[in-house]
Image 1: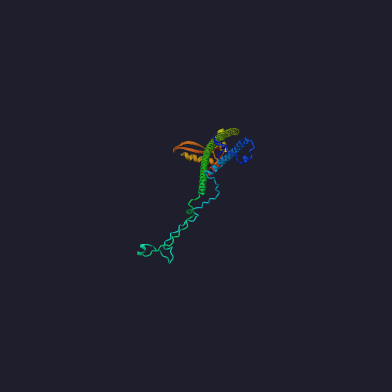
Image 2 (image 1 turned 90 degrees about the vertical axis):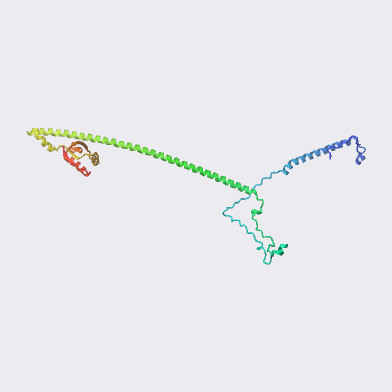
Amino acid sequence: MAFFKFRQRGQPQPEPTGRGRGRGKEPAAAGPQDSIDSMRRRARHRLVGAAVLVLLAIIGFPLLFDTQPRPVAVNAPITIPDKDQVAPLTIPEPVSADASLDEREEVVTSGPAARDSKPAAAPLAPPARSQPPAAARDPKPDTKPDTAAEALAKADAAAKAKADEAARAQAQAEARGRREEEARAQRDEERAKAAQARRDEEQARAQAQARREQDARAKEQQEARAKREAEQRAKREEAARARALLEGRSPAAAQPAAAATQGGRFIVQVGAFADDAAVREARQKAERAGVRTYTQVVNTKDGKRTRVRVGPFGSREEADKAAATLKKAGLAGAVLAL
């Protein structure tokens, strides 16, 4: 069917139809005008139909010829049994031909071999086949669950690897922290030892200084006591001479009497030692007992000796008390008059 129908050149004009002959009185110009309008209307109808067909083809062809399948959401649960909990697969043993026959059945073979030989037992029916497992019955397993299982296994492996890495990093951090803590503790211990050594040294120095000061004070006190005793002795001697002059005696005769009356000066000798270690030990014992000592080096017929003495004392009573103290300390003391 053509869109436009034109009359060819030289072709006779078609005869009017019956309806046209009945209306012979209508003007001749109305026929061509109606045919043009009808042809335009048909052309529009055809154009609209062609546009609709093209639109349907544009929409329908991609749907019909789409090669990629639509994604289907797989929500099937995947259960992977543990290999230690699943029963092992048992394969049935093949059944022999004799075992598959009844008591009254036998295998009959045809041909010349059957006439020459004895009839051999043969199964009348094919051996019973064991039921294949579900995996064998399904030649085309579903790949989607396997893919999902593989993805799940990969995810578990990745999570386990991440957990192992995190545990390894944590262990390394803990080990590093322990090493730093041990190094810090060692440094603190070394600082504490150095500080204790400095304190001990300062304490020893202070004790030595205090001992020297104490010895100096003791020496000053001893010298002051000796000076006072000398002054007192001089005063006593002066008084004795004055008394002797008043009594009509000579001063030379009054001096021994005054010395005997007043008692004089006394010392306590611990001993005379030739070894310095013995001297040091005797002095330490005496000082621990609370008695101050001094030494005197003398030359004897046996060689050089060091005397350890205590005193001097202004009276014999004081010398006896010092001798008793030395005796308690395990030292021998002899009271001597100066």
